[in-house]
Image (cartoon, rainbow, N blue to C red; front, side, top):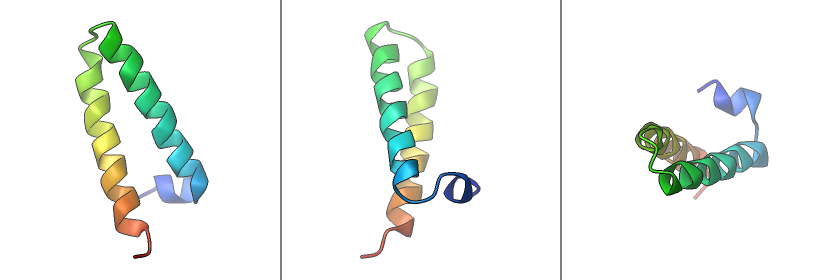
Length: 54
């Protein structure tokens, strides 16, 4: 995934945190865009889980 090269390490986790905050704001105003952002966050979570050492 290109995100891993653009946002290495902790930076990608910070991007996820910002997206989650934006998602919450969208939910609070009942925006239909919250669902799409939720899917993006889910994909990012799976990517982060797949690359972290166990």
